[in-house]
Amino acid sequence: MAKRKPLNKKELKEIRTILLKAKEEILNNAKGQESFCLDKDELMDPLDEASANIEAQRELRMRNREVFYLKKINKTLERIDHEGYGECEECGLHIGFVRLKARPTAELCIACKEENEMVENSSWKRSKSLGVALNEVR
Image (cartoon, rainbow, N blue to C red; front, side, top):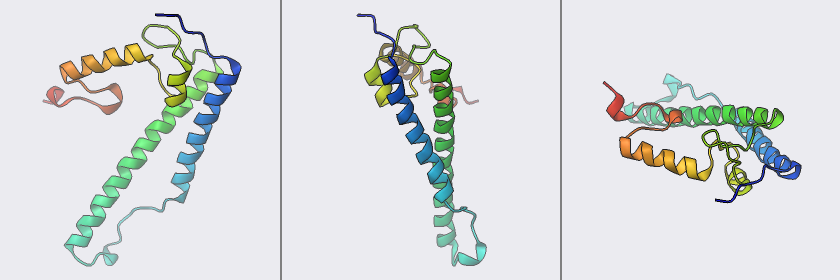
């Protein structure tokens, strides 16, 4: 495999712009959303209440995902500022610009990510970010 070069300043600036845009979008979405507390007086019947509960749960899951991604964005921006960004955390090789442009918060190169996914799939393990696998629950 050919050794990849570290990102240059122009590439880092482009990645930073992508991250800042994603961060701004998440923060704007959070500002624009109203509270999803359920008002019992507005719910006419049990079906309306069930539907509202399902929607509130969906909204909460989406917000949790956004919070998780926002943390990843902030961590990535910090890594850009303090160097070390763009290096695979497993093998130490530089992650390609094309991969980082597509997934700016990537911490693993393609080869290491594919290897990790094969191990996860073969052992029913879930990725660190998603919690424990069903076979690990007792």
